[in-house]
Image: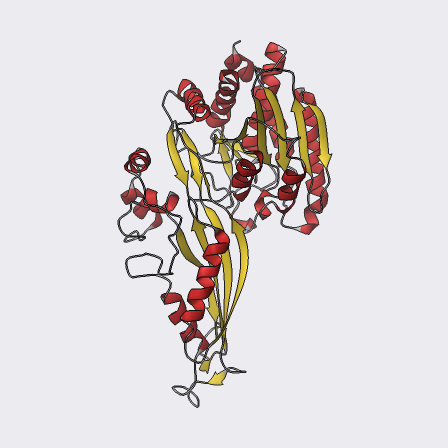
Length: 451
């Protein structure tokens, strides 16, 4: 069947439908938008039904709804579970948007709106790819299930239990997700690794009140000094994390992995120019691509304490605070890393300081062998449409539910993303390049057919 002609003929209709969905402010993090979350789920359920999916269900949770749908009329053929999310990030700062975030606008063949690329736009491709096959062929080449959540942007708290309780219902031969990126225009990529995540807060206290820095200076501990000393102990001068056992479970990169990552042909000089940096920085012995996708990290996300207003206030602060996150790879265990960090902090506690550690988020890393036949078929589909074999990448971000789905369902996860790195996901002026909307539809149809 001529799918290119089909999608060209229906392009305006498809984009109009997507813009309807993007107008719903489905921000999962803000309780005021709970009715919008329900509305967005109901909108998608209606479109799945119209596409020809069956058993379309909206499961209510303690948080936001989870959608399920299926079309199981291909006996003896593989079953593909399509995952995505309909929730979006908050829009602040609103004044930096060139057009209102929930009033979609197409400019220069780019669709601007919150959720355009993360993840409504990419998820919508799957709905329309399945619909196109059913309308053109009258049947699907494989069995298809959908599992769509509304809490990915807030770490998917409801989906973990839903997966455990519905493992049989969601059973499949593979999971298919579009929530990652291409390397650039006409540079396809398939993600074979997502870093895990863990986070903690560090609170330092000294005296029971702020003190005059003239009267007490030089004689009592300073909470800010103590915190800075403690934080400085977490890294060596060459960027390596200085916590005992931190790299356990993160073996060095093989020559094969380094060769594949080098295919990204990343321009470090261009990045420095774009970010107005004098130098890049990170773990010695690794390229920027390796550091940001295939190696673990420890980053300070926030540090504060003492007087921060205009002018001078000569005090010795009684408390200081820091927020820390780690990105993890391969077989690193988030709880193990948190325990090692807490031990390091206790062993390096500065004199006179009382230190409290609060453990927060945890998410396991995900990795998959790119030589698996289903990933090679995904690469074939990209190559057929884009004219170039995709690079198998390891992405620096975290989608903790991916590892959980792979482990609970015991199946490979295929990460076929169609976003671009410069599409401002999580930032003002989020957008989706529509050439990848067009090519994404063709790629997904090709991939499903190849299975």
